[in-house]
Image (cartoon, rainbow over all chains, first blue to last red):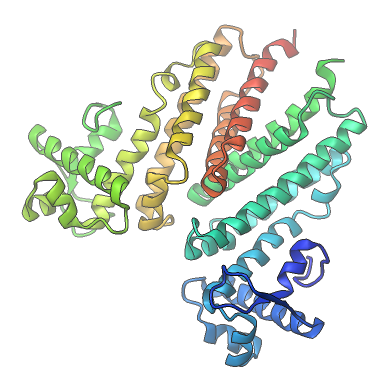
Amino acid sequence: MRSWHGGTGPARAEDRRVRKSAGPEEGGTVKLTAKGAATRGRIIEGAAAEMRERGVVVTTLDDVRARTGTSKSQLFHYFPGGKEELLLAVARFEADQVLADQRPELGDLTSWGAWLAWRDTVVARYRGQGQQCPLNMLMSQLGRSTPGARAVVAELLDKWQGEIAEGVRAMQRQGEIGPGVDADRSAAALLAGIQGGVVVLLSTGRTTHLEAALDLGIQQLRDSATRRG
Amino acid sequence: MRSWHGGTGPARAEDRRVRKSAGPEEGGTVKLTAKGAATRGRIIEGAAAEMRERGVVVTTLDDVRARTGTSKSQLFHYFPGGKEELLLAVARFEADQVLADQRPELGDLTSWGAWLAWRDTVVARYRGQGQQCPLNMLMSQLGRSTPGARAVVAELLDKWQGEIAEGVRAMQRQGEIGPGVDADRSAAALLAGIQGGVVVLLSTGRTTHLEAALDLGIQQLRDSATRRG
């Protein structure tokens, strides 16, 4: 499991900034010191754990302060936009977690064994999670149509699809997937199948659709190598 | 477009009953007369139109009464459970609408022309709807995890998948889809792709994923006929 403050990519850099303006959506960010970033990360991790245990709606800023041992002024120093800004940061953390839970397979789809292991990891992750999806609950609370919530989802989908597409290209280089396959389009279809499979799981408790989408999607990629041969 | 009170199947029969008990989730239903069913249907259609125009959250029972020209006592005669029961009936109406909007193609997937026309109908429907999904808003308001909301979604998914699977079987009988294809599993994967494509559309405004899922899913079915030669 990747720690919140472990990465160094662009998304991490954004996490290291804190908004100075009133609203969480406005500009005006300032770099945090390493210690400040660690404290902010600790608050986010604690808030995420609290919200997973007790629910997003009922968790208050006081609950987060108590759990993370932070003062009111500290909390407002790191999250001047209040609960909404904290929720958005927790949503970004949970979105990162979605990808982290699929590693190392997702970042290394370079053999059919890795693809099948990834498939199993995805199914096990969502089966384990069941009908309680932290990111989904956060999105409900934030309002799915707010710019902040949309940005978190869009970024997650982009990264996820990009890593699947990278896997398709890796297999194409090995001749295991046909050269005519559009990697981005295949990754988009597979990602749609996963999202829809999770939607069905959240409504019905069954992983049938998630498994069917993954299995048939991967099968289609495998078949592509032999179709023209 | 199928009228709310046009069908005769089991789902229609349930719509013709009205709960006599306090809560919308409890048993105790009574058959309505034809006139009563028509009035109840008119209230539901009016409430659905009002909620589509003004939003689910802000629409009050008084708004529904004003639009449908019904008295307070009439409204509570047909929906003794109040707004929650009405919301559930509107959700069922909107769920039926999802399928009705895909007809006649969905119920008649007996040629590749019909499959492609259906694909275009689904994409056009959701593109036209954009980021405002009435059923999704109703589910948010009802609470996705409530038994009533879950039942509406489960029934919609079952019917939808069943009709796609029926189309797969029809094409298998014509030799256009390979005999080894599991119709239910293929329909489940295709349905997952549609659901996920809509989820992505609701977050990003783009139909790319919906189209990729439908196109690759249908392509896989077409390819199955020639794979075994």
